Image 1 (cartoon, rainbow, N blue to C red):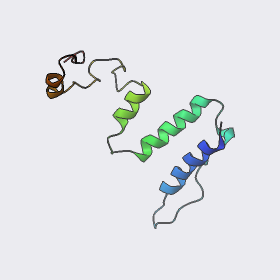
Image 2: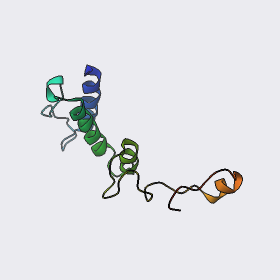
Image 3: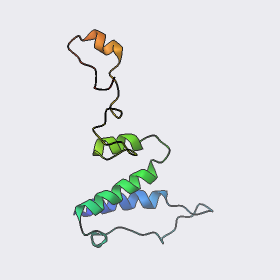
Length: 102
């Protein structure tokens, strides 16, 4: 696994970790190559950091959908996850077909 991946995740952790009084702490856990035994563990750690970093910004749904992960109890291929095509777009192109479930 490339060192650049660890450096980037650690940069995000270091930048956002501030204790009261505005002073950054050096006691955080930094990722190294020894922190992960598989590629999937590194991906999971990156997704966790992304989840924390983007909390309350409305990105979680799109991240889960893009990665093909379940959203609550809905599987990635569930019709309720795919958005409808706007009627205006359907009217403009008669060859276009509405997404299933709408």
